[in-house]
Image (tube, rainbow, N blue to C red; front, side, top):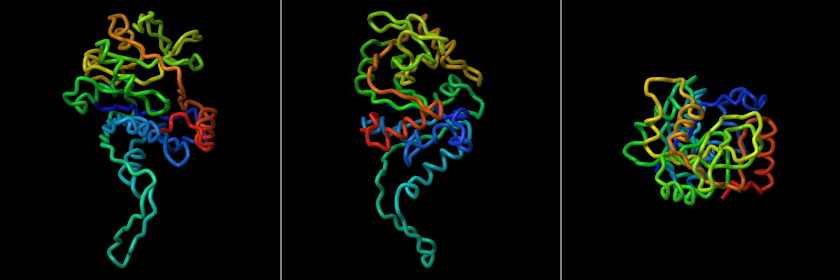
Length: 260
């Protein structure tokens, strides 16, 4: 099952950290938050990624094209035509990573539609954003999705109310979806999704202005095609400088809940 990650964010609200970086490349410790997200999936057996690139995509491409030299010590022998000898790597990876240019100003729904061809013939794929980490049990999440047969499963969490609030029934069926309400009293979208290919039918091709979290998800909810998976563990996005500090402090202390 492939994992599509929305990587087009600019991180403009994290001044002094993200001035020259796309949001997914903002670091937690020595590695960008994108790496932490991907590592979370990979340690649970999901290593085939499709990155929906946008703002400053070159920084993300450069990181992965030069990954080994970034994470390992190495020796360059200039007397042997600059032959390189690597000396191990703490975080060697065996991932498959597809870099998909989806447009610098393209909105989230249009980015997802743009990578439909890279999902291939898979009936199901996972989707998340490049700016949030969690200790979600991916197997439990995907099992829940497969059990109900709807087009989309969204992970429902309980952080501060500034994201997409969901009204849901006792069985987890999403009745109404509202992006970024003024106040919230229930669960909000944690941004970890499992999707059927039918989701692509809710996204018009040839457009770059489709916001996944507005009309498409509202239509999915109205059609009874969205279910919520309850996650009561750790979840945190990197949306502000305070979030950046929190995540880095947790990682530096060795208590980061998302690290497996």
